[in-house]
Length: 180
Ligand code: NI
Image 1: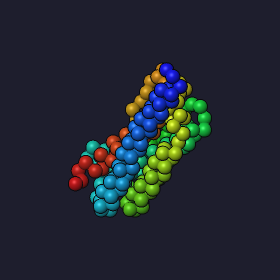
Image 2: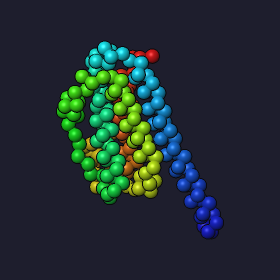
Image 3: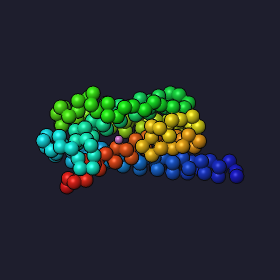
Image 4: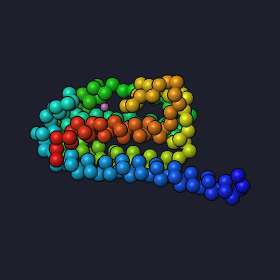
């Protein structure tokens, strides 16, 4: 391949790569905006009722998503500062219980959930693309991921970020599936 066509080919793949990442990020942004809007219309009493297909109330599910944001925030930052994706898990029920989400005001939880995810979106959008797509053989995604990856398969930081969004959508579905 000549220098010119090589340059064109590199430019094209970098544009295509960016378009794909941007679409995914744009989708995450829309999820945050539309869910925040719908969540804010749920009343205090309703937010405290256990959901049909979950052991938690809406307050506790949003609380769990705040815990997920806090734990994954550290992973998304540390993952850019080191060469592996080795992270500890966390006791999900223990975090929900100890945060006393059930006794917190619904509007405060929704606002925190929205603001935290807008910041995570900001972190994702500014992360170095090469770093995001570097395969890591040393990881713990067989334990900590929503959609787990075997220890033997390499993963990327971008996979971990997309997996975070999949988990978030899964739990939003538990709250919003029965609303309009
Ligand atoms: Ni979960």
